[in-house]
Length: 206
Ligand code: FE
Figure 1 (cartoon, rainbow, N blue to C red):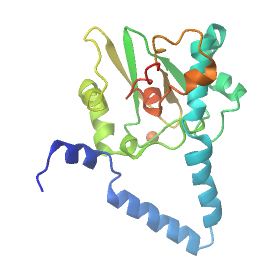
Figure 2 (figure 1 turned 45 degrees about the vertical axis):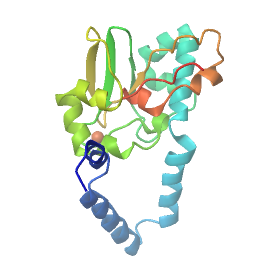
Figure 3 (figure 1 turned 90 degrees about the vertical axis):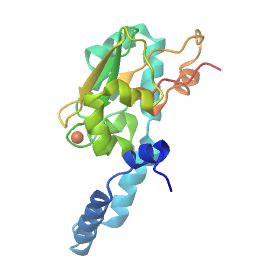
Figure 4 (figure 1 turned 135 degrees about the vertical axis):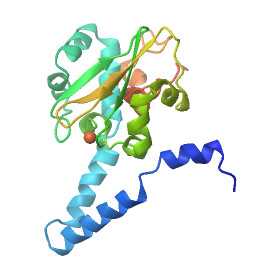
């Protein structure tokens, strides 16, 4: 089978199999030594994959679009402001919101591993953890963005933020046109996970 460009993109989006195997090996060892309970592990994964997920972040974005006082507070102290909405905890101890404008487009990566604001976005997608994304988002962000379908005017600057265990970032994308007067709930439905990482735009108003 020819190595076409789709395959190439796909290969980048998969967590390296040795990493998966290592995780499985460690998990098996911890379970066999009685150090962790597999049911507890499943419950944690289920919580972050299904119960938390990017819908929390979408609620924050929708409120920021709707309420200018909230918007200002959000950029003044993100961690505290989202905690007041009930979004806090593991991997969300220190969060900073980034503001996309016509002048600046923000994109988030963790070059070292996979730091990500779990209480707002859930568990990171596998491409976020891939070696390719972690290296290329810094080296050639515009090219990476284009592969995600994000093309920006040349006058828009791209700013790349390196998440760490100390500080995790999430992006407040620009509000889609034609959504004046929409409820927060309706707005939240337009906010995609990738738009809060900076690798996508929100959906268009229907
Ligand atoms: Fe990390």
